[in-house]
Image 1 (cartoon, rainbow, N blue to C red):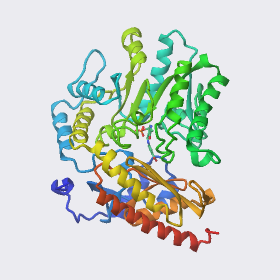
Image 2: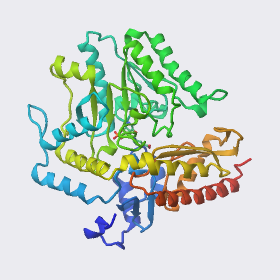
Image 3: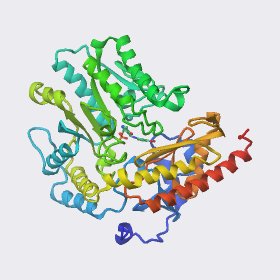
Image 4: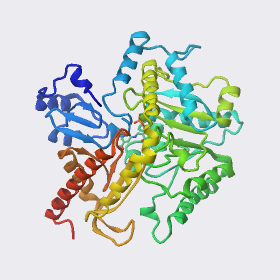
Length: 476
Ligand code: PXG
């Protein structure tokens, strides 16, 4: 980006912050998501003060390359003045009005129409929420309502996968397959059933990826038969599991899942909260995997994180039932179709389209990231590396193996992934650690030269992590 908006708007590049005071205030009052607050208090939170392009700056003036796009969302990159202007214009014109009681607003209806253009064929309708969790709550409500309208109210069971992430509301966390979330409440709620995830590295030893994809899909059929086909309402899945560790399923998996859903008349929900809006090199991830979902939940990249917004795209028979047959659908949020969030989304989608960012990921930067990550697989600490579009992962191993997906893992309790993440952060690059799997999902604006810069920093930090774990005697 040519100019740095934060600086232009009066934040001096060398503005001084009292980091210690900010940290103390933070730990005195601010409860963070998914955080051990006693541990955070001892360490002090890193205070992020501004951002531009693919970089963040903290309160000590350190520049950090953001390999995680905020949290899988700043697809168009930081510092987009036109999104800020679109939101400010809308705020000045109509900051809020609700969409209940026979009213609408211009950005919301325009965004609904634009999303219908961008979505796969058959998706003509969209319901807006403010987050991905609310989107999945909405999808669940729609699935249940659909089967009521179809006079099959006994179809209530939704099948999901272990290690899936579908959000942190009660329904989102229940649909998700994160055991650590379930144990902290009475979750999953009734009528949600989990099958194993299609993780070739964990479950596919001794077979080809293609064979494993079919096997993993057949776990769905087995579950349907065990639970009773007339009781199963839907299957939900992320085309590529994001928070679970960028788990890329074998190419045979989704077409087989689709066949099974069709065979039993079960709805398919694609959770595109991470995969949507270009991260995988297509507008929606399902397009690449032979999925024909009935519902698509989305959030994050729809606004590049500039405003909170999510929603559910609705196709075919579900749209027909909800729109033409069902009467009132008693569901909605104050902020459904929030005009400022929708205005920001419209401008963000214009940027992604006009700058050809999705195609660029497919044709140029995605393949470049793949090659660059493949080169990291030679590192002594790396078992294997894989990527799709602008999402990539590598796993840290104690001893390398000869074959792909081979290598001896570290004991989980050592927390080598977290150690590695800390070296990355301290050296100005953000990677996400999922156990000992290290992940990036960079902004789609990242250039090939910037990918090289990121991967070089990662390589240096892998060296530092290797020294660190060797020093602790964890290698052999
Ligand atoms: N579905 C998917 C696939 C997600 O990745 C949600 C739903 C929920 O969205 P909201 O907007 O309610 O957070 C998500 C969110 C991580 C991480 O550590 C990932 C998410 C959220 C927080 C942390 O990778 N994804």
